[in-house]
Length: 218
Image (cartoon, rainbow, N blue to C red; front, side, top):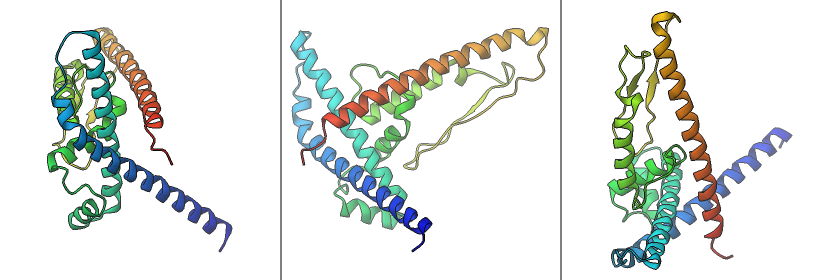
């Protein structure tokens, strides 16, 4: 075996090990979600500090668990080449009882988590988070722009288990006196986007810390 072949084998083994770890965490997270469902429904809606703390802790736990489920399902989607193979993978790895819509939402959440920024209080399941994100995108300046305003057009694909990306096509044209307001608007949008990216990075760092804290003991 040559040097390159050895490196390829090591890389493949490392990827497999990381994938196995993601699937294992996702399987544990799905079990915790099922066990915790009755307790979450029974959480007090009181306005006291302790009640609020319990709700926040439950909310953060559920977001983390759904993220881990989504990451595991992404591994399965990558490994399975057909629907039949994917359903076989779900059964073999303990995800066969995850509802189809929940699988779709969990995959979406894992694929888009870093771009969501700060999430509103009370959103714990990927389905409600996805609805909130779509409403926010629909109401955003970029989503409501027309080709006459900096030529920005946003294309949205239908929800699917396989993550989809929106395609944004824009053309600023030649700068001139008539285009100066549009250029200023574009500059504002770029600045807002950079702030959202920073919030996404901060959220990713927090999630990574939560994952480390919730690692099962060996």
